[in-house]
Image 1 (cartoon, rainbow, N blue to C red):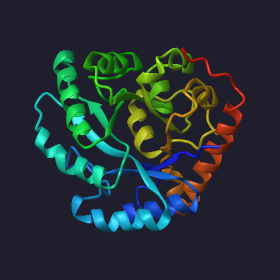
Image 2: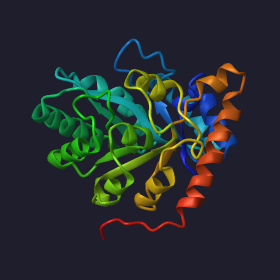
Image 3: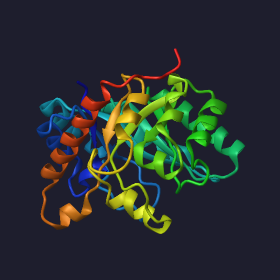
Image 4: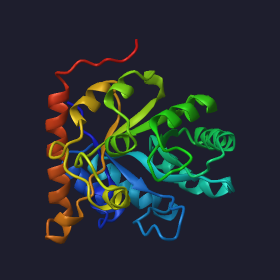
Length: 275
């Protein structure tokens, strides 16, 4: 049975090198790393091009790969050249894709810039995952993300289906199941309470999600709605557990164990995707 990648947000106190070792310890085949931080306030442990050889050695030693390189913003004013170094890093480390957020409410301009970013990514043999969430006004629903990917018309682009963001923006697994599978880039697993006040949702997304299977989200239904070969990753920040002294490895293992139970449950459900 497939095992999901380990997203760095799950164990944010770990360095990229430590993340690789943790992933190997929980038998996760890949990791999702930060290599491009669009704002100074994002104090994430990002990997730089200067560390590419050390990181490549670490990956080779553990047999780990990189699924996603995060994260790239589409904004009204774009400086595309600044994206080339993190994409070069991703290509050097044989990553699969970059992750894009859209912060431009002028849709046609956003589509044009998204398409241009996809073209640059293609130069580096990288796919592009467009993530929608309530906090990205230019792309705050599954419907908008699908519309942008379709309008851009790039073969290397797909929509990222995050279980939390799907639920918090009013989406459902049934909507995912009815998508053309070519539009789906990858999925992200976590869990959460059925409801969360809007003023707490950013904190929830960044700091305090729940282990898959311990909340109210229809995770098994979502997994069953995705194509069977969809890449999945674990994005499960557990700040309360960290403050209680649970180590990064312990939290990652708990998240992986929960995800594997969900995947086993979902394997018996029918995939209802268009042929």
